[in-house]
Length: 398
Image (cartoon, rainbow, N blue to C red; front, side, top):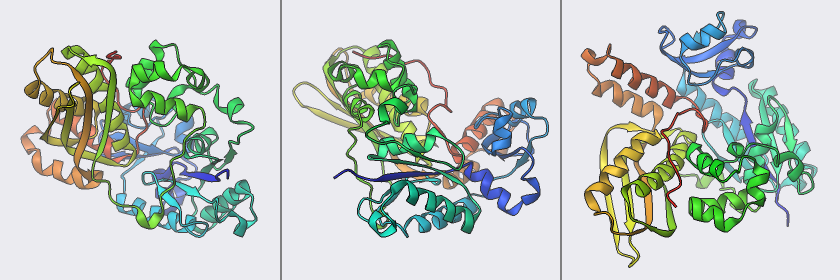
């Protein structure tokens, strides 16, 4: 039986929540910013009017005000966002118990077994949910309706704000094939760079690519992305009451041929770390430790882990820690068949921000290094997409 999956994405969530208590600012360009009194504070979220001026998430207030001199900057209230997130999910739960949050402002709903109770039309149910959220909470959302989670997510991104987009077995190729491959969930910058070298730039090109070639280039992630691009995602929507705190985020790849040089290993670790970091950001988490796993052709396993000096969700930090562990544990050119990278000791962004303020001394506060750390901490507390963090170059190890 064909599934009916919704992906609900609250529009400009942080800024929209703030404007509920500041209605006098609705007609003005508004951004929620870390350290709004500083020109070096970071834009965490913005309303649609600010977006129309070209204001972008994770740029500095100084950069944003060069584009939009009238930009109003307000501080974040994370506990308020968490409260509204729970209220919105409560509305979703009226339609199904299969509600799986994806970060603070997104959720998947599986209404396959319950849609008959609400008229049977998934698009009409999506419209009803949008109307209820707007009427009861004053927030808008975009909803993607499809037959799997990946396509439903693409649907909610397809038209914003306050819209419903249906991606069906009949129209998905015409709608999705032209989209850039980076729109597909879990295609980060490192994976996109590998796909670019294979001349794969759109979802359509990924769909028609050779799955074996993709697996050789990206490991199991390559075959998984090929399945996603062909509408073959079968992952279930988890029941809301079974949602548990994420304890670790990891990724692993078995390589078509053994890795023997440090450069091959470094490139492979960059790809794995890119995927892990992107998932941390998506869930509003970051890690205080990194674990690596190594398997040779004789299936000998080595596992090492380390505590980080400060928590992170940045690819370059995770990759650097992973390489430090591997360099200490492995002798090149001994062959490697499998590598894994796992982010451990996870905490929510707000909790980790408080820890940072304890670790950093007042003497460091004015230094350029501390300024960069503060920017990163501010950005971590916001909602990130795959393109926010700039990564160093990585290339296909195979």
